[in-house]
Length: 347
Image (tube, rainbow, N blue to C red):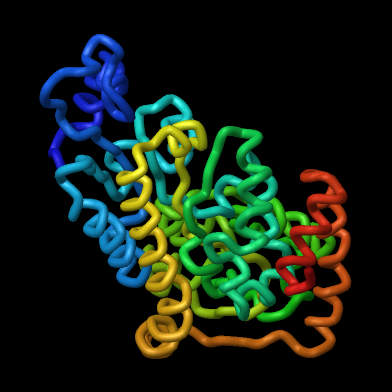
């Protein structure tokens, strides 16, 4: 990876480097020798994510095995583009691909919200293959994303373990204890389903979450175990209420028009790397990394896990249905119902 500073890179990109990123300018067509095009990618995730980060670098390493057809510049930890700037940077051509957490961008791409619908997310968690490349649900989501000139290469083999409620001194170990609590929530879907329980939602990026919990800016946080471990929240939380509120995938996105115009050999390299990522991400993390590494570490840290009662799960499922209805209105009734059916394994 070229060690340009963020300012240097953006200055170069703004000066016209983007003109050669996905193809040579017209004036250079037909020259005898042309440098391979450069593809710049980003993730806000840091190496501290011992589960999520290594397979991302595995994807990058596979791309870099093709130096004769392309050059890869990759920036992690938000060093080039901040989390909330990634979509804008992709659209502007500053970057050509990005890894992103789907729950962060459902406001921009509502169709991705199907992955985080409460109670439905359990079905996708158990059947990650329903999001695989070329699956009916993958195709439907990409058909909708195409309207925004966006293409999702892969969802990384499905969603990661659902997000639960983690709390400290102001414990939350039941639905009743949610009332009046300030809770960090990222996805709209989780925010909607918690409203009936009297929760005050607060959107806080994972990079700012440790201090927010430490300083009491929130009483609890809705988070996946990767965030708890990667951001060292286990130092601040004491309880995990295993209510499967929502979920997300770590997906790879490109601009659709750029993908469509990409040279066949480059496209094949991205596709191959995407297939590898799909086979080595969510499934491996969910079934191996979490139970064998993270869960024992949480237990050692003294975090107590509390499961919802059957009555609480029933109540939660009932309150989830209006969220499904609400979400379908965001994406269109017909498309929304079709996506839900595919997520449930119907059709």
